[in-house]
Image (cartoon, rainbow, N blue to C red; front, side):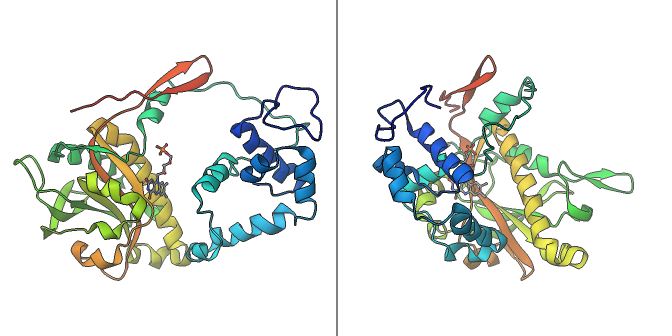
Length: 331
Ligand SMILES: Cc1cc2nc3c(=O)[nH]c(=O)nc-3n(C[C@H](O)[C@H](O)[C@H](O)COP(=O)(O)O)c2cc1C
């Protein structure tokens, strides 16, 4: 990993060339190969093999401690906040760098290296699909919404209908609601109101005029994004449209569908000069009436959006991908 043959047990990992990425790899390997839970912060504090060994000798195996705890959280989402969450900013960064979502296999196992199958426009689509936390001040025209929502349209097919994404049993229970936050400046913009998007007619049904979503519905970290945004999108499942056929699996299936819809929106937004920011948690309950929702409607996901302020260009060098942040102001 460090490109050196030998390291003494009392030698400082960082003085021998280790950096934060190496540290994250060490933590990941400690976990998968030795069953030891070592945090990146700890490695910074105790950067020698001797010090780490002394500190972790009596530590319970990682599998008993961490994994089962988080398994519980993944199984029942509502219990998520009962786990001790990583909240400290530095620890969160360290946790991210450990990339626990990527499995690590023993060194002597052989992986089959796949050839580079990158499609010509793949890297630019990837670079353009970006979670945007800043938006341009210019207003969003109706035509931009029309282009964006077009990816969620239902098209007629002999004896049925077709969408760009899949749905269990072709039921398509996930609905799209739009809230426009700003007053229109000209006739090409939507009035401030809430809307239901009809995917069959490709039309917006105004629900409540002058509806106001309050900033307090957002977590502190997302409030600056809300201030700059021009609209919100909400993906809401009509559970009555799926539960009779899928019972206890209905919510999971609807969530999968919302995920596919989100991917489409993410990829199409740059082409409409729009930016979207995923919003994972929002206090939606007080606003249900603004969208004329019934008890059977469940919020699955939401976005804040606005005119795209910048885009990211991607440069490919050989097999490696190098991202070049390039601010292109559209307005
Ligand atoms: C379920 C989910 C919830 C998210 N919630 C938020 C959020 O509340 N605020 C935010 O700024 N980004 C949120 N994101 C966006 C991620 O932070 C973002 O996708 C990630 O940093 C990767 O960046 P990229 O999408 O630009 O590649 C969320 C993404 C997902 C899939």
